[in-house]
Length: 422
Image (cartoon, rainbow, N blue to C red):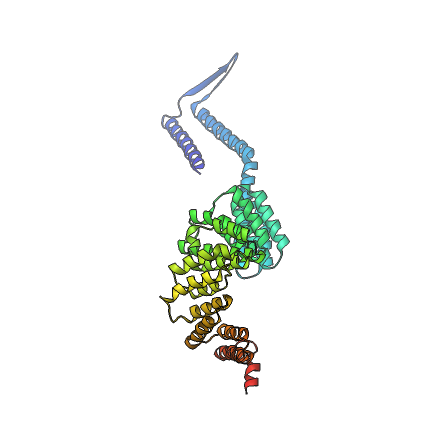
């Protein structure tokens, strides 16, 4: 634009100079002449004609040069105009594709987005949006093809493309594929917050608690989640790991896992109870007995008291004596009394067992207390009285079930129970 303006100004200056020269010559009566000699030849003409010829020659040369320059740059100009036209069409196609995608016309959106993607200044947006549209209509192969094209056209955007791919796989419940994609991304960008967050989602969806436990330190150090969320995640992860290990009833594996769990998680009562129960089930009850007693000493827990009653020590009398020490602080605790009755029965101290169980039933009836009392009476060769306690236990259990159904009428089978009662 500036060059064109300069050309016009120059041309005007030439014209003005020519006009001024002509007027000067005319004002002086056209006097003056010019002689041009070349070898033996010479040309004599008037000054006015010479000025006119020079001006016309300059104009002709100027026009000729301009035409030559225009012809020289014509391919470049045409190419630039074609590029501008394609960019305009691509921009219009991108806008149309985004609108169609937002309106739910996914197949039409893909056509708009892909048709001019190669000419777009931002082809990445075209391909990624097309991939989302393809997934929305269930065309997973087409989705992956668009993601591949995005990678080929913009290899420097590998992280953004990979995150989009993983996000689409997660939303389509392709958790294993998503985890594979995210593992590759973690190699490219270790400790990247978005990658770690999606890895957490994939591991949790797959219930892969071991994998999740490995990335928890990264989630914490990179502040991907809030502190309260991290603590909740740690508790869920390690409690699930304990449950998984407990299925194999492998005390060594459980012990090794317990040592790997962070100390602040091991102190949580819920985690401790899971570990103690798993070790008791695995046959390592003697190993955890002092730990259970220590936990009860720190914080009174009815769950731990019941758990302690499930531990079979070689010296049951000694175990009973240690348990009786808790009566001083909890003399009327029905659960503690029931556990004492159970240990007394195991130690074959039947009178003591009957006393504890009667007191427990008076404080708070329970199915287990009725059953234990029946077992004591059977050992005393009193089957009639034993059967009465067994019967009372069954009635108590059935009444609890009926009460639960009445409180929760949505429980399956409640209509049948209510019909039988009627």
